[in-house]
Image 1: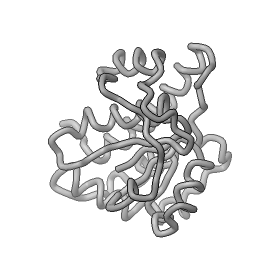
Image 2: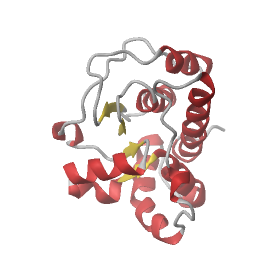
Image 3: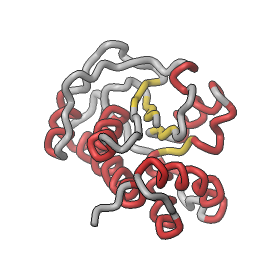
Image 4: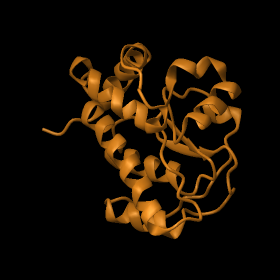
Length: 182
């Protein structure tokens, strides 16, 4: 799985680390990149603090540029916005049916979650990915802006908190399907 945003210092590393924390040891690899990455930079301090409050670990993150080889073998690409989704699909058209904004994927996962099958997170993820394209057609969003995570970079703490809440609720919806607790 690859998570994509612009600079790879706010939204995508937050989503990456939240997913990786919950899927560690489940055979699911999660990485992140930016369409205009601040290559080598750590997460912003605000993102790191929000991630730590959510139980994640910001240490060791270094922003990297989205390049085509990063898309090799990726089962699912999650993006911060519809514009990022378009950039991924332009770079690798074959990923059209496996690239979603994180909020779109969370919304659709909640719709099809009861149908998803598999004995573990990896198998459940693959089944979910197979179901998402059809779900996109069955339940299109009425306001496309609702599928984007606001960009907090260079903005106030309130905007960072809003971005984290948007991304976090989408990640929770995905994890409820892929790695249900109990």
